[in-house]
Structure formats: C-alpha cells, structure tokens
Length: 192
Image (cartoon, rainbow, N blue to C red; front, side):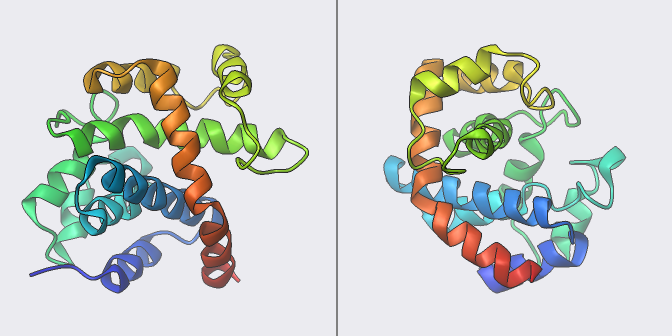
C-alpha cells in the first residue's frame, strides 16, 4: 500500500507541533525530492522519507529513531521507509546504517539543512537564494556557529556518498533554493 503525502503530513502533525520542526521536515522533504530528481529516482518516496525523518523527535527526543518504527506503523510505512528513516540517525541515536544512496543523502542533509538554514537567517536577504558556497564554507568551519549541527555527520555523509564536502554543500544549497518559497508557504499554512 502506497502512503500518500496527506497521510504522512497528518502523522507528522500528530507528533510535531513546533513551527521549527514542521519547517525542518518540509525543508528536508523538498531537498530529498530535489536529490531524487537529480539521481533519477522516485521523488515521492524520497520526499516522504524526508518529511517523516524526525517524526518521533519532538515528542520522544530521548527515543529518536527508536520510537519511529512504532509511529510509522500507524500509516503502514514500508520496511524500506522505516529503514531509511531510522538510518539517518546512525551513530547518534540508531544502529541502523545508511546503505542506499537515498539513505546516505538523508544522513548528510539532515544536519546540513539546519546549518544552511541558520546561515540563511544571518544573511540580509534571510534566504538561500543568494548564498554562495564560499560563504557556507566559512560558516561550516566556524564550530561556534550553529553548534548543534554536527559537522562530523555532514562530513561522514559526504564520505559515505563518495562525494567531496564541497559537492554536498553546493548541491544542498541548490536543493534548498528549489523549495524555499514552497516551504515558507506551507509552513505558514500549517502553523498559522
């Protein structure tokens, strides 16, 4: 049985009410859709995994990636989706390793979208639309900036993919540009 986006969004909202968490989920969904298209893969599946990757984080932060399978069972998520979602926390809160390209991308971009989002909020434009790779690299090197975003996980994600760090940073900027406006509109609609 295929899961619809409406089902996934309802599950996300059942367990997440904070506007920041909703925005992050929508952002990672959009980024994963962009990467799916770039890789010639299914943007629906990749997007839903991005949308639901932190489904358990807000209500169960101490059980992040442990509680997710139980919550995802409510919408009859496939084993592939559960594995992908649990693998994004590998080494931090999960022992499920990212195996497939999509899982490795999700692993890398989860933390990276947070870093890019924080960097965008510091810009006069408050946007990723005019963000340059060189600017992001400076923020990446500054360990005090967005300290909660693990540079080690981002770097590990790039290594797992066999991509340079610059490639992951640049592609994720492009992916965030592709969905920035729609994320803002949908977050406003959902969070009022």
